[in-house]
Length: 151
Image (tube, rainbow, N blue to C red; front, side, top):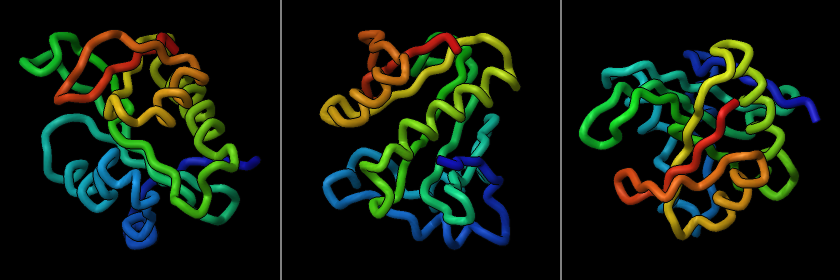
């Protein structure tokens, strides 16, 4: 499986915006167009990336650094968005993408903590994150369950 990450730029942003999750997953992840707007217009260090399998864009991910605030009391890195297009789900791309991202993140930032959050009802995502090595913290941010991993 040849998974790689590429910047979202003027050449591929429309393709990124057209990626979709299944209808029953739409309440679990913000649309990619919204994530791209956040990356461009909100404060913070947000890093959007398109996920490719070969030459085909199959998903989207955005990671971010948040300084401590009233929502979460620790300076922390997060996988803020993660999605695999509905046509490419259940083929191992999600797990492979997360594993490759963790290796990328570790090589760029060292062995530090990384968090991800999801709707508590999103059992498929929670199972995937736990298989990768994330552990539920018992915390909730904006109603989402927080999982943590030291990469």
